[in-house]
Figure 1 (tube, protein in one colour):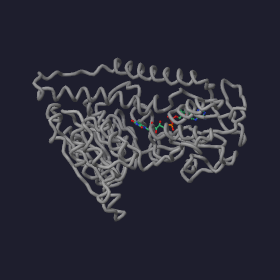
Figure 2 (cartoon, rainbow, N blue to C red):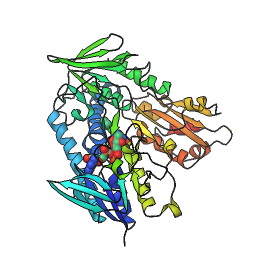
Figure 3 (cartoon, rainbow, N blue to C red):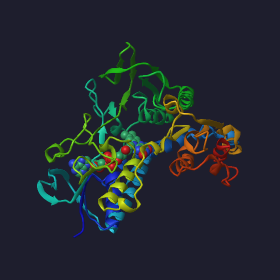
Figure 4 (tube, rainbow, N blue to C red):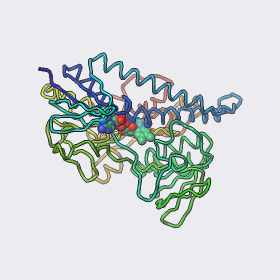
Length: 453
Ligand SMILES: Cc1cc2nc3c(=O)[nH]c(=O)nc-3n(C[C@H](O)[C@H](O)[C@H](O)COP(=O)(O)OP(=O)(O)OC[C@H]3O[C@@H](n4cnc5c(N)ncnc54)[C@H](O)[C@@H]3O)c2cc1C
């Protein structure tokens, strides 16, 4: 009898696991209470990056004069942008559901919870069905964290999910939280012309990142007129008429038309019957997993944001794939464990920021010897041709062996270019492998080859 594999949640983790397991011969049921594609398609990656692309096109027109063109004044059409986001989401959703059904995945619409170690109950339109499972994957994602000192109203005090579709564009906005999501929101709203204030709890935006990387972004923010409130923690956000007032712990007060919270997320584990089924959660409510994404119950897996690893769509999909292989016993033959330290990630600001693997500060803290090489994009013809010489490529390698350990890129197309370093890190390639690749000229990738010298 085929393995009965039941998956709760149709985001990147759930739908990748479903497609892959079905291909490997499992009888797969995928339960989704909202839309297949998950939060990633509805509110997170896709709408945010679509809006950022439009904002980027607007700011690009401001640099056209430097390229020998008369400057055009682009005007935002909110309805057309909303239509574009809907179109992209619809297209992606159709392609994911098409792929799932082509692999024979049974898709059920409804809310699911575990009612026993091997039983998942689905509730839809008042009726319930219990589905028996040999293996279960919990891939229910996460939701924006809302602190007890603030009550978002969806109108002026916003969470990241209230920003799409873009009903209105704020004239001024205070962004609370200066991690990846916060800085992307700063970039997006300032590209559309809003007056933006960023509340930065430390002395550096992106506190987890390389200070040199953060410095390039801070320069861009200051150039755009973004107000940085460093060393301040928001302690209250209230509405006063048409204004939103953000109060900080050092007494500073910011007034703007809107405020958005970007202070992380909480796992969607409540109401799933996990404790009753015997699945262990950590103190933050995340499902504790081992390197195969198994919970303490070996047939119950968790992948994606709910697993408390890296909250990235790319990581969620890869975990889903690995879970499918493990459920189908493939790990015994050709299974490479997921190494979260080798996950590439990007921040879609302007310039873009991307990194992978070992960071300089991390190596320093571990007392590890490394070789660091850095080349500015201004050294490449293509950056000058593009009229955008900002940023650099930094490669970190082992001085004894030349093996590439990590790197960061700040600049145009950093999110694409980092793939070269990511591949090198995953495949244990050496700097000479990059140097000796015959790359295109003129291309920004030439900075990679130079940094690998
Ligand atoms: C603003 C923003 C931008 C982001 N941009 C990026 C980016 O550019 N790149 C990137 O890699 N990551 C990005 N992320 C992170 C990314 O969105 C998440 O890491 C990713 O969505 C996690 O995938 P998932 O499958 O775990 O969960 P989700 O995508 O959240 O999917 C979980 C699904 O489970 C369903 N579900 C929950 N409970 C139940 C239930 N009881 N029954 C049935 N269904 C249920 C939900 O409806 C949902 O569809 C961004 C996040 C935010 C907040």
